[in-house]
Length: 215
Image (cartoon, rainbow, N blue to C red; front, side, top):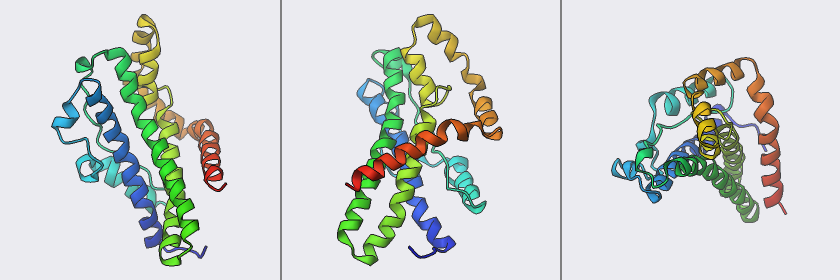
């Protein structure tokens, strides 16, 4: 493919990023509503409309900065509120609500991969070329969100899943890590360990998915 301009690069990343983070949050709210908590539904958060999920820092500032600095666009949406006390089985259901986010990103990655296949079949440049450019970031960004959020560090989804599956007192001890979760993530990022931990799983999942749809 030909070299793309900065504006074109922004255009092919913005939709995968916006929908990756908004579908992730909407999935949390949707599963919570199925399990007894209608908080997100009452607030109108069970939607993939990005406007309902915009966080000024995570959805606007951070993606803009990461793009301007030459990296991949990255960000997050405003967390969907979940009242765990309203869930029918709070401990178990908390894990299910948390798992919904990464699973939604897996689903989005599959959709983008299938769209790449469609683009190849269409082979009509005005449609297939822009779509192909967008599908790569769509798969990759959703793989990043899925793998990152599955790390067993509260308050990431993986941390809440771990809290939900650990036996009583061990879950309580583990949940006490949450106030330090952000600090742990910052340390992992600044030391480069985060990339070492999640880099290989992300690229393996990305290649496996793209290879699958290319069959």
